[in-house]
Length: 165
Image (cartoon, rainbow, N blue to C red; front, side, top):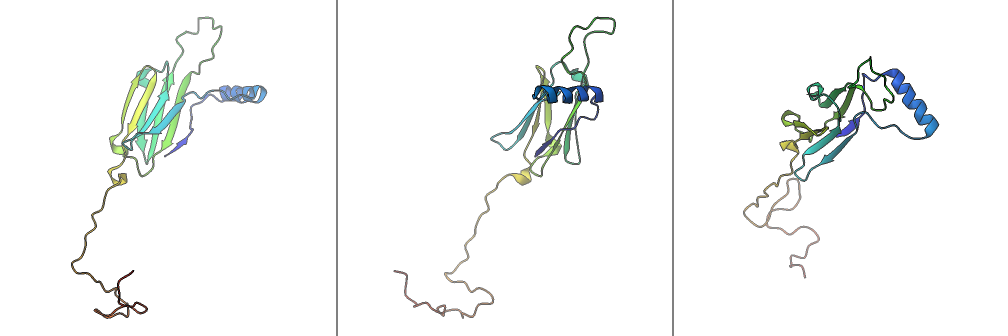
Protein backbone atom coordinates (compact mmCIF):
# COMPACT_ATOMS: atom_id res chain seq x y z
CA UNK A 1 0.00 0.00 0.00
CA UNK A 2 1.47 3.38 -0.92
CA UNK A 3 0.53 6.81 0.41
CA UNK A 4 -0.07 9.58 -2.09
CA UNK A 5 -0.71 13.18 -1.09
CA UNK A 6 -3.58 14.65 -3.08
CA UNK A 7 -5.38 17.85 -2.11
CA UNK A 8 -7.35 19.18 -5.11
CA UNK A 9 -9.27 21.83 -3.16
CA UNK A 10 -6.30 23.54 -1.56
CA UNK A 11 -6.24 27.34 -1.83
CA UNK A 12 -3.40 28.22 -4.27
CA UNK A 13 -2.54 31.44 -2.39
CA UNK A 14 -2.28 29.57 0.90
CA UNK A 15 -0.07 27.00 -0.83
CA UNK A 16 2.16 29.80 -2.18
CA UNK A 17 2.42 31.29 1.33
CA UNK A 18 3.34 27.86 2.69
CA UNK A 19 6.07 27.36 0.05
CA UNK A 20 7.53 30.83 0.68
CA UNK A 21 7.46 30.18 4.42
CA UNK A 22 9.25 26.86 3.92
CA UNK A 23 11.89 28.49 1.73
CA UNK A 24 12.61 31.34 4.14
CA UNK A 25 12.49 29.39 7.40
CA UNK A 26 13.86 26.06 6.18
CA UNK A 27 11.05 24.19 7.95
CA UNK A 28 8.14 22.26 6.59
CA UNK A 29 4.61 23.34 7.44
CA UNK A 30 2.40 20.54 8.79
CA UNK A 31 -0.04 18.80 6.48
CA UNK A 32 -3.70 19.70 6.75
CA UNK A 33 -4.50 16.03 7.40
CA UNK A 34 -1.47 14.24 8.88
CA UNK A 35 -1.90 10.48 9.12
CA UNK A 36 -0.32 7.29 10.35
CA UNK A 37 -0.65 4.02 8.44
CA UNK A 38 0.34 0.74 10.06
CA UNK A 39 -0.30 -2.97 9.75
CA UNK A 40 -1.81 -4.93 12.64
CA UNK A 41 -0.79 -8.37 13.85
CA UNK A 42 -3.81 -9.88 12.06
CA UNK A 43 -2.60 -8.44 8.73
CA UNK A 44 -5.18 -5.64 8.60
CA UNK A 45 -4.16 -2.11 7.69
CA UNK A 46 -4.99 0.84 9.95
CA UNK A 47 -5.14 4.49 8.88
CA UNK A 48 -5.38 7.20 11.53
CA UNK A 49 -5.92 10.70 10.14
CA UNK A 50 -5.90 13.81 12.35
CA UNK A 51 -8.97 15.92 11.63
CA UNK A 52 -9.39 18.14 14.70
CA UNK A 53 -12.20 20.63 14.29
CA UNK A 54 -13.56 18.95 11.17
CA UNK A 55 -17.32 18.77 10.88
CA UNK A 56 -18.11 15.03 11.36
CA UNK A 57 -20.84 15.28 8.70
CA UNK A 58 -18.28 16.52 6.15
CA UNK A 59 -16.00 13.49 6.51
CA UNK A 60 -16.27 11.19 3.52
CA UNK A 61 -14.40 7.90 3.01
CA UNK A 62 -14.68 6.27 -0.42
CA UNK A 63 -13.00 3.43 -2.28
CA UNK A 64 -12.91 3.35 -6.05
CA UNK A 65 -10.62 1.37 -8.37
CA UNK A 66 -8.32 0.38 -5.50
CA UNK A 67 -7.90 3.95 -4.20
CA UNK A 68 -9.06 4.95 -0.72
CA UNK A 69 -10.00 8.65 -0.55
CA UNK A 70 -10.56 10.58 2.67
CA UNK A 71 -12.16 14.03 2.40
CA UNK A 72 -13.14 16.44 5.14
CA UNK A 73 -13.91 20.10 5.65
CA UNK A 74 -12.87 22.43 8.45
CA UNK A 75 -14.61 25.79 8.67
CA UNK A 76 -13.68 28.62 11.01
CA UNK A 77 -15.88 29.21 14.04
CA UNK A 78 -15.64 32.96 13.62
CA UNK A 79 -17.66 35.05 11.23
CA UNK A 80 -16.68 37.74 8.75
CA UNK A 81 -17.86 40.46 11.13
CA UNK A 82 -15.37 39.37 13.81
CA UNK A 83 -11.81 40.68 13.95
CA UNK A 84 -9.31 37.86 13.47
CA UNK A 85 -6.07 38.34 15.41
CA UNK A 86 -4.34 35.12 14.31
CA UNK A 87 -5.52 32.37 11.94
CA UNK A 88 -2.88 29.64 11.85
CA UNK A 89 -5.07 26.55 11.73
CA UNK A 90 -5.72 25.30 8.20
CA UNK A 91 -9.30 25.78 7.03
CA UNK A 92 -11.18 24.53 4.00
CA UNK A 93 -11.41 21.16 2.29
CA UNK A 94 -8.78 18.48 2.72
CA UNK A 95 -8.29 15.21 0.87
CA UNK A 96 -5.82 12.35 1.05
CA UNK A 97 -5.61 9.27 -1.13
CA UNK A 98 -4.09 5.87 -0.50
CA UNK A 99 -3.51 3.26 -3.16
CA UNK A 100 -4.69 -0.11 -1.86
CA UNK A 101 -2.69 -3.14 -2.89
CA UNK A 102 -3.94 -6.63 -3.67
CA UNK A 103 -3.53 -7.63 -0.03
CA UNK A 104 -6.31 -5.29 1.15
CA UNK A 105 -10.00 -6.20 1.32
CA UNK A 106 -11.56 -2.94 0.08
CA UNK A 107 -15.08 -4.39 0.31
CA UNK A 108 -15.08 -4.74 4.11
CA UNK A 109 -13.33 -1.66 5.47
CA UNK A 110 -14.73 0.24 8.46
CA UNK A 111 -14.29 3.84 9.62
CA UNK A 112 -14.90 5.67 12.87
CA UNK A 113 -14.32 9.26 14.01
CA UNK A 114 -13.67 10.15 17.65
CA UNK A 115 -11.72 12.89 19.44
CA UNK A 116 -10.64 14.50 16.16
CA UNK A 117 -9.11 11.31 14.73
CA UNK A 118 -10.54 9.29 11.86
CA UNK A 119 -9.65 5.59 12.15
CA UNK A 120 -10.08 3.43 9.04
CA UNK A 121 -9.53 -0.33 9.29
CA UNK A 122 -8.87 -2.24 6.07
CA UNK A 123 -8.91 -6.01 6.62
CA UNK A 124 -6.42 -8.20 4.83
CA UNK A 125 -7.87 -9.97 1.80
CA UNK A 126 -8.59 -13.65 2.44
CA UNK A 127 -6.61 -14.34 -0.75
CA UNK A 128 -3.56 -12.65 0.80
CA UNK A 129 -3.71 -14.66 4.05
CA UNK A 130 -0.96 -17.25 4.35
CA UNK A 131 -2.26 -20.79 4.26
CA UNK A 132 -0.68 -24.18 4.77
CA UNK A 133 -0.81 -26.60 1.85
CA UNK A 134 -1.02 -30.28 2.74
CA UNK A 135 1.63 -32.40 1.08
CA UNK A 136 0.50 -35.91 0.22
CA UNK A 137 2.87 -38.87 -0.12
CA UNK A 138 2.41 -41.43 -2.84
CA UNK A 139 2.38 -45.12 -1.93
CA UNK A 140 5.59 -46.99 -2.75
CA UNK A 141 9.20 -46.04 -2.23
CA UNK A 142 10.43 -45.16 -5.70
CA UNK A 143 9.23 -42.87 -8.38
CA UNK A 144 10.20 -42.59 -12.02
CA UNK A 145 10.52 -39.10 -13.38
CA UNK A 146 9.00 -38.81 -16.87
CA UNK A 147 11.69 -38.39 -19.48
CA UNK A 148 14.44 -40.08 -17.41
CA UNK A 149 16.52 -42.95 -18.79
CA UNK A 150 16.29 -45.08 -15.66
CA UNK A 151 13.94 -48.07 -15.85
CA UNK A 152 11.90 -49.02 -12.82
CA UNK A 153 13.93 -51.30 -10.55
CA UNK A 154 17.32 -50.10 -11.90
CA UNK A 155 19.75 -47.93 -9.98
CA UNK A 156 20.54 -44.50 -11.48
CA UNK A 157 23.87 -44.17 -13.30
CA UNK A 158 26.75 -43.49 -10.93
CA UNK A 159 25.10 -45.03 -7.89
CA UNK A 160 26.52 -48.12 -6.20
CA UNK A 161 23.21 -49.52 -5.18
CA UNK A 162 24.31 -49.47 -1.53
CA UNK A 163 22.84 -47.23 1.15
CA UNK A 164 24.55 -43.97 2.07
CA UNK A 165 27.07 -44.31 4.74
